[in-house]
Length: 397
Image (cartoon, rainbow, N blue to C red; front, side, top):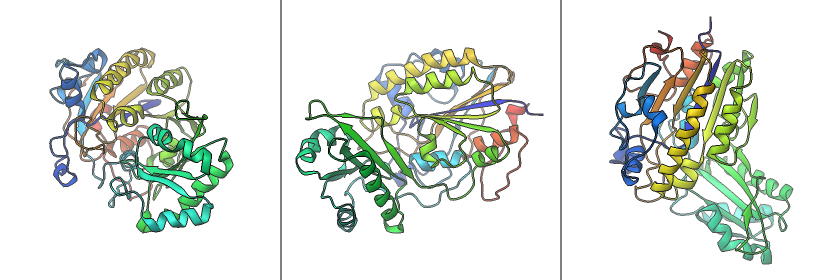
C-alpha cells in the first residue's frame, strides 16, 4: 500500500547550506548561502522552517533548535560534477552527470559560434557577454530597434539567451533563431544546457519590459528519470515553474508557468485542493535569478521570510497522507565573489502530518535519494539501472 498519495517537492533554487567537500576545486571553499544571508540580515524571521527543524542543520542566525516530530531534516551532497540548475534537478530524478555543461560566463561565446549564428539567422549579433537580462536590454534595446541586430548574452548557467523586441523581431522568428542556436550548441565543443528566447517590448530604455513569451530550448535528460517511471505507471507529475523546461517536457504530465516565487507557492497551495496521486514538482527560481546572481543578500533574506510565510499556509493545506519535501539544487551565496553558483550541500526537510519520529538524519551522498524514495513510496521499481539514489527509509517507519 502507498503510504503517501501525493508528494510535493519544492526546490528553493540556489538555497545551499555550506561547502561541499570538493568546493575548493570550484573556488567555493567557505561559501554558505543560508548562513551568510542570515548573518547579513542580522537574523531571519522564519518560524515555520524553524518549527520543521532547520536549525539542526547549521548555525542560522534567528533560528533555534526545537523538537520536530513531524519532520526529518538533513543535508544532501551532490554526487554529480557540477553546480548548475540542470545538473541538480536531473540528479534529484536519478541522473548522475559526470561532465559539467559548458559555460561561457567569463569569456562570452567563441567567435566561431557567433559568426555561424549570424550567418544562419541573417542578423548581426551584439552583446555576447555575461549580463543581467534587464541590464543588457537597457544597454542594447535601442540599438536593436535601429539595426535589427540580435542581443545575445549568457549568465553563470550553461545558457545562451537571445533577447529581441517583439516589434522588431517577430516571436516566430525569435523562436526559429533559438532553434538554430540549439542545433549549433548540441556539439560537444559548445554543449549548453539551455537556449532561451527572451522577448521584450517598449520603445526606449526607460520603458523596455520583458514579456511572458519566454521559451526555453533545453537538452533532454540523457536517460529515463524517476519522473518517467511515475508517468509510465499513470501517476501524475505536475510541474510548477521551470521544471518542465529543465527536463524538456520529459516525464511531465502537466505544467504551469510562474512569474515569481509567490506565484509558485500560490499555485502549489492550489494544487493541494485538487485530488490526484503522484508528484507535484516545484521550482522557485527568484531566489537564484533575482537575489543570488545579483548578489543581494538582504533581498534574498526577505524572499526566504516571504517563502516561510506562504509555507505556513501550505502546511495547513496538507492531508495526513501527503508528503512535503523542501530542498535546493545548488548554492548561490550572495556574499561570495563573482556572480556564479556555489558548490554547496543543500538543506532538505521532509514533512508529513503522519510522521511521528522526525529528527535529524545523516547527510545523504546524492540528491537522487529523493527521487528514489518517491518511487519507492508508490511501490515502483527502478527500471533503469543507470539511475542513482537510495531509499530514505526512516520516512516509512
